[in-house]
Amino acid sequence: MKPVEVNLSPVKSSRRVLSALVVAGVLLTPSVNAEVTLGVFAGQSFIDDGDLNLTQGNTNLNYKDVSWDDRSFDSPIFYGARVGYWFNDAPNWGVSIDFSHLKNYLVGSKTVAVNGVQNGVPLNGKVPINSTNLEDFNMSHGLNTITFNGQYRWFPACKRDDSFLGRMQIYTGLGAGFSVPHVEAVVSGVKTYEYQAGAGPVINGMMGINYDLYEFMSGFVEYKLTYADVEDELKGGGVINTETVNHQLIFGVAAHFDM
Image (cartoon, rainbow, N blue to C red; front, side, top):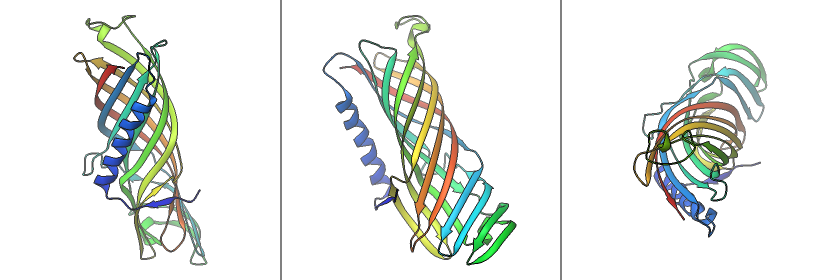
């Protein structure tokens, strides 16, 4: 699928995504009484090494086990938002929409095995990434992901009340969606700097604990695993393909209310 270019500033893009999540939460809410949650979160992410492919003109290179920096707390930080809905007739079951502003910075100075053809000349060996045509590549304004999730929760006290265990819910979830990366690449001196919508599929899973702090407010801690298969279009033609696995330790707050 060819990504669609989206020329938005990082701040405006984030505001529009968060607004869309709130609207989606309202649209997901039927007329019966049920619990709706609106949450925001931040935390630390960790990115596994993985392969990267560059295809452009008479260049076709595979980079083995490249490394990524997450820089979770550098501006713009890693953050996200969630709209959740728990069914009235089956309160253990729910659905949610997640937006996550993940960040990937390629460690361009790392020496890796590179195989293929560069400018029509075979290249097979171990070299620094930035000594090849791939001079720089980041998604610092976000490997932004939007996923649609199914969720299940347990009540340790078998009910929800003001007791210590009654305030606690343990939950898990699984979902799929798509990415909207902000591509920042320099390949053979040509710079690409833009948002690209629909750049590839995303799958995520989560497990966490939610704890009621006040009547309508809770805090949660969560481990989330995200797989993203991203195809980034380059100015002047060509693509960069990456498959990344991102581990996230999340801390957040959520408002919950009946509708």
